[in-house]
Length: 345
Ligand code: BGC
Image (tube, rainbow, N blue to C red; front, side, top):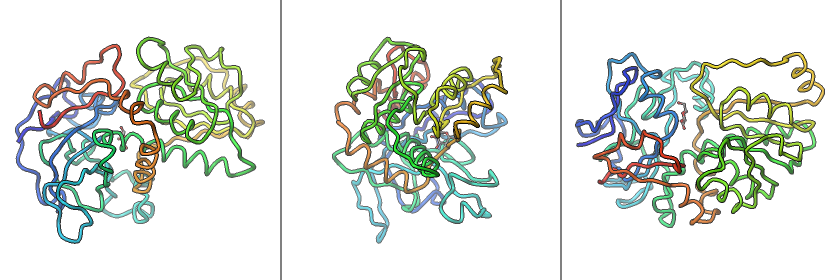
């Protein structure tokens, strides 16, 4: 069967690979691949700079949507159901976090991730998954189910913000989101659903992003100096040093900033660190990094997508490329937000 393959650690190795049928060890449920979303992590894996030693082929695809071909009895799934696969698997030990189902907080780094680290992904004509690691996609979401995994990154991030915010009186009103890619826009969607005033920063005001933000009732900025309020919460989705530092300086007292993005780097900037530290300390500011998601965050992501305007979500998927030509999904086009691969084409 065909799959989206890459050799991590080897540049320009992305290809339409011919691979064996998915092994039973991947799980008892057989699924037909429908869509795979492409994100920055895939671009890093394809660049050859991350994820491997250039020796082993990996099936990419961690943002998934599939249709069940063979559901094992008692699995809770039926043939024909739409499903998305969970990305991370607990480490084999397991560490205390993984043992509690908090593999997103794995302590020893020996977890695996489908399509990213040590385990083939979902970017194939067929894949297998243990039903425990599959999430039912309500039929009404249809192709939008491919957004469940990226949305799970934000339901987890918002949970972190809430937990940290809860250290004292917490009633956020103003939210700054930095970066208007899929992660930033989904962060803004959740902020808008919660009734917060949302401001989204991006470096460019070209393409569909400004209108998507306005349709959430948010304001769109290309310059942080135009932000007229102090954010109670910042969801950072660029990973760019200057944006991180400048946004942290703006935090309101007891503000929480959640870092969700990673920039390829390396880059360095001049920072007056002692002044920044003073500002963070005297305001009780909190900066927290957040990666991946546990099972409950996927369920929360389904709820977020179900509560959203379907047309708005549909506009996030700006390009669909066939599996037969999937490496073209890796070349950025000006209006791209989320590019997905049609695994049946
Ligand atoms: C994925 C996460 C994953 C992270 C690091 C992200 O693109 O969405 O699930 O944990 O990459 O590998």
